[in-house]
Image 1 (cartoon, rainbow, N blue to C red):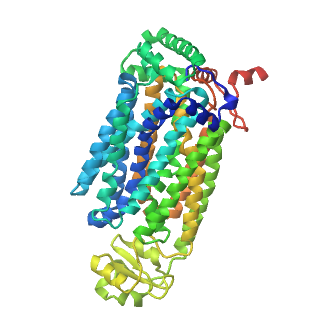
Image 2: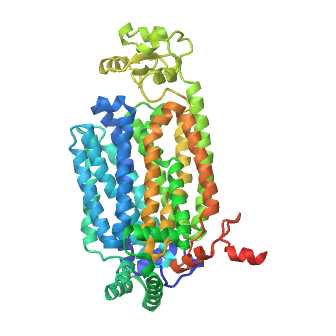
Length: 579
């Protein structure tokens, strides 16, 4: 924070629990605000499972890829607006009010989705939920960061990341629990309103951020809260540092202006903020273009692409990846203040790239070893039941399951009854034909094909999550909560969060289309390429902020830094001196 007693060499996870044990009020603030992360995670996880059953209820959704992508990505579109407005609201009205409004938006969106009679109403509900998620995604870590002593700030902000992944895991559990219940997906999306309501009630009893209060001349209120957070011998030093920071900002007040666009222009013109934005935007964009939300939004669909046709099986296997994501967040809490933000992200990116390349190879092998399509098997169900694209093809001798599924959105593969890896049938998609296939104890495939490589794809997804979660999963939010000067923290965090959600929108809106155009193998290879570019950008643009007070981060950005191989900061002017 601005000031406080900072001990960079001792900022470890154990220190977080030691401090929280002595001052439980800190953990109360962090966990209450962190429910915003839970909402973020739940929304990400719940739609992946709910989409399977929305497709079953609305045939128009099942047959139109763009409609599936729209249902998923409209929450992201809402989040872009929510994050943009949230940055302004954070500075104007405070962190607490922003969280309360986010909860109301999320609750209303959950109710609208639950009661939706048609896909268009689901989309409206998704936009409302997205507005709430966008505001919460950048406000919750900011609130936690400003209510945390510098020595444990990284670990406490990581609780927000833990609750994001915990929300995803909870969503998969609830998805699995309601697979047999009447209304399936309506329960899945409707339950999301409960944590929003809980956070709203909890936040009513919590104070505003002490940094925001001090910045808005509410010194007595800010001091009262700081006395609950810091040890008695630390409070005065923290207040002095805060006062020094505010005075420095007020000195340039006249040239900045108070309007949003004036502040935005001023932020970009300020070398410290601009360098902070380079780092903040880099890590947020990289977080999305490694493809994580294709896994979280479409995880059951990816599992089906790997050859597991059952909705319930796909959800159960997706639960494993979500659980690993939560475990990775706990690992991050242990190491983020010990090894540093930058180092964790770089190690994470190397693991991500390796896993994405391996997934690309695995899905390629899955495609070329798919079971062949047999004319005899297809005609077994009657000529009228056979897929028209198969009947009209000039040469079907080379057709396999994957050729059948790619030929038309109206084609499905009915596996061989004796051995699912033997030649099967390419059939038209209707409820009656699907019933005939399953009546003969055959498996019906519309997303992927029977394959012996499927289990390897699931294992690689797990390794991908393990690589992603401790580094790129949580660290970008930590970096953005501590890299901007106090006056620009809301605007800077808002800009970075918008960049995150815009990237998220691009990835989630195009994933299914990419898998149709490039295949699963080509899509994962494309994400590996994006990940490599992200690794390069992080290496050159993102400094280390481990254990630094906020004003120390400002000074470091003002001087500039040069990266080196050991992932440590090297001030630019020191390098000049060495020459």
